[in-house]
Length: 475
Image (cartoon, rainbow, N blue to C red; front, side, top):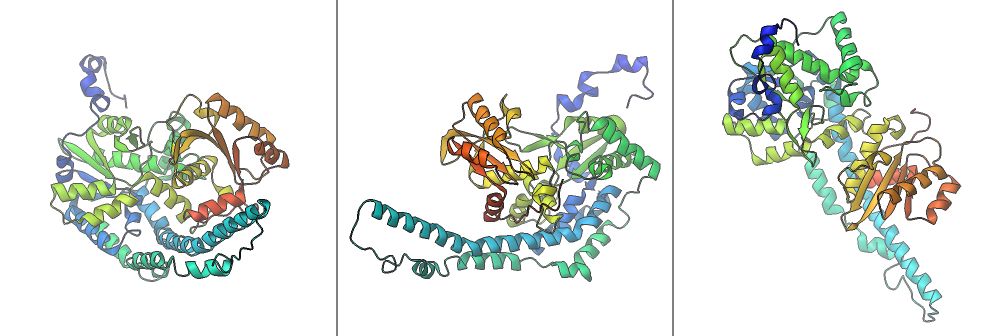
């Protein structure tokens, strides 16, 4: 970045010019990017076309066709799309199967809970010395009666799920024959895909990423180090970024603009607000593109691009399509798609990295009704600091252990110490394995809830995720 600069350059350098990405990271004229820029597509944007309904897909493709002369796909994005398009469909189908199973199990789960409550009432009557007989069958509260009462209770929900699934037209078997969507994408991008690096260039960039950029958290891609199994895989985002810079350098124009569309919403691409929402590209990315290619950057999600195309290019886009894109255009969706799509919908929790396991638990807690306390000085002592929305005055410390061996007494004591350190009211210890007898006995005398691997799988299933803890695999 500093090659060719002289002493005279130093004298001319200005904060407002040479560090403009930090002075003003917001692009004040997004319309200029929509009307006059190179529009770069990331792989996850193309994969999302396999996840949305046909009508939304048609509108997105029509918007792309309107700017077809300015579309461009980095070679890295083309590789990742080609490798993962089948899994995108498999993952979508699997999500419907999981949801249907949860709905079907809900009635049996409710019956078990109601039957248990009736049994507790019967026990209470006995302990209270109640002598008059009480026939649960006559009251319609025996198991057979509960089954009759709840017969068909989830049918409307299952019918709605069937209707939702019927809106999708691509299935795994279609990927084995002619894939009409692939043919559309192929025609749209013909002649608009970047070239690959040579073996020596590729090796040098991967080594640069792992030896210098990632250890120093220089975006993008450093958050993928723990999520990918190979150095090349972890460097995917950086390779895409470098190819985008290379393309920008080639553009012969006085003013150069790059509009990069991505469903990747991690903090190594975006600046996030206090609630984790993206509000602009990382200034390091904006400045690097400016320094190396003299080009300006606008980073948008797929929904952001389609909304901008509707506003600035008069593209025909319905509110329903924008709502649908909003559902998939989240970092959580991207993470879940990667975890579940890559394993045909059923990951082994022991195969996940510690970071991904912890993140999955965080998503589960959120769906269970827990909300997260802002990070504090104690956050390195445990994994999560939460409260339940039904009781926001009670603060809870959560510790997560992706273990194969049983969790012992020491971990329970550590959690109890963390609770005292931050004045928490209770704690939850979650593991993929089991708990030793000592850990179980200690937790009984403390305000600590233990969730072992078996119960964890059940909770995940209740909230739409099917997973395993196969001890024959994992690290």
